[in-house]
Image (cartoon, rainbow, N blue to C red; front, side, top):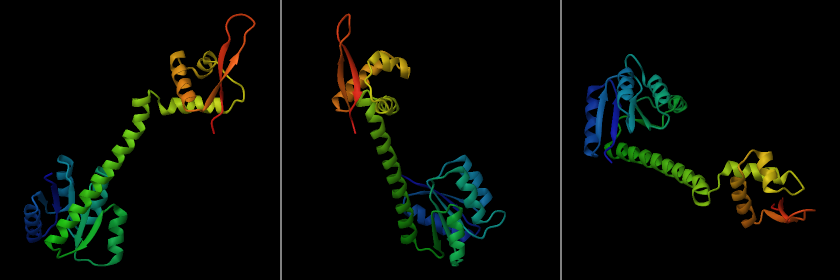
Length: 213
């Protein structure tokens, strides 16, 4: 993947150096001379990583980080500055910066930091997608929706008596085939038992009672 890196620094020499480092790593770099320009650029074209200087005219790095975070909560923002005070680093991290490094930053250090943050972003996305697929698989593979299952389970759990599918359908406002499908699922998983109810007239009727833990 060819990364797009946005660089905000008022020093022309540093902008050139950072651009060369990014080019060496095989990435595209866009440069701005202050935070306001960087914000406008970012609004027009999403970036994979943002490098921000602290001391810049018009809008300094701290304000830039705060505004960038309003636009994108995930993009890695690396602050590069000569100010080595811990309180400054803490203020940047509180504002939403992802990382903080002192100038002059060396090419191997900068490249490895950017690669690390890109990997972290990818890992986070993989975990989210995996969790989403796990949640959806209950519905896709079983024809069972989690919220409907919980609704029926909670109702049966809260009552000691048994219910027919007609009863459940009426009380929960669900269609008969839907309740039948969930009752079959709960029976297969040992959560409920069948209670045969013998009527004065007609065939015995199946009712269902919660037994699951």
